[in-house]
Image (cartoon, rainbow, N blue to C red):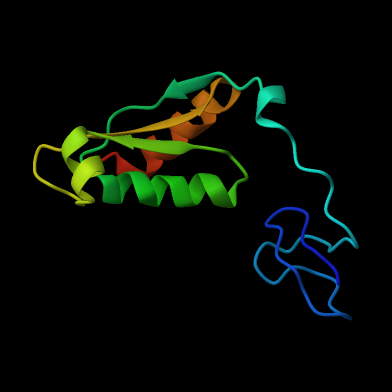
Length: 112
């Protein structure tokens, strides 16, 4: 069965391209990278006024192949809430992608 090397979905025989990301499919996925081998230095972007905004930005980063993670305040993290007034959320991205991600955030949210 073919696999997408980017999103790792498995496809049925006779499909050559991933329908989600457009990557050419491969016969086998490479071995996973061990976490101990990853040397990423994570940097925070500007705080956003809620998790919904952070998830919107993360979705764009994911589509561009930029790894990221979201960190919320205790209240929204512990109780799974979204968009509580006064709640801030921070997105962390690799150091080498900081400038690109800041530009994306600026274009997306320059009026909030």
